[in-house]
Image (cartoon, rainbow, N blue to C red; front, side):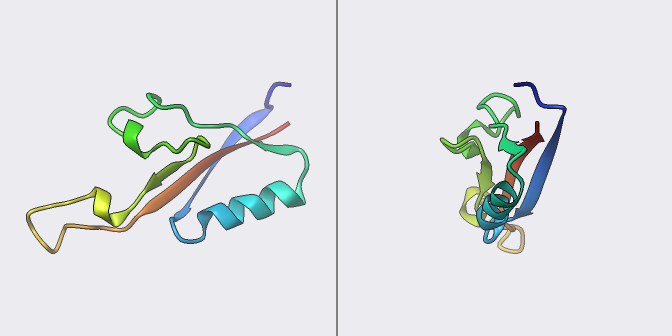
Length: 81
């Protein structure tokens, strides 16, 4: 099967996986289109085994305490078949 188009879902890291699971459950035409390590230079360490992109505040240290630990993010690529 080939995807007709791709969509990327981005969210705060807390609720992202649950939202994606609900989308997949609601529409059987929607499938995950895993993100591969190497697709986004410099972010290889943030791609999960399931092909999602996940960053946490601890991934962004900074000597300036006001900048360290900025928000975490979650991204999953979905495709409707």
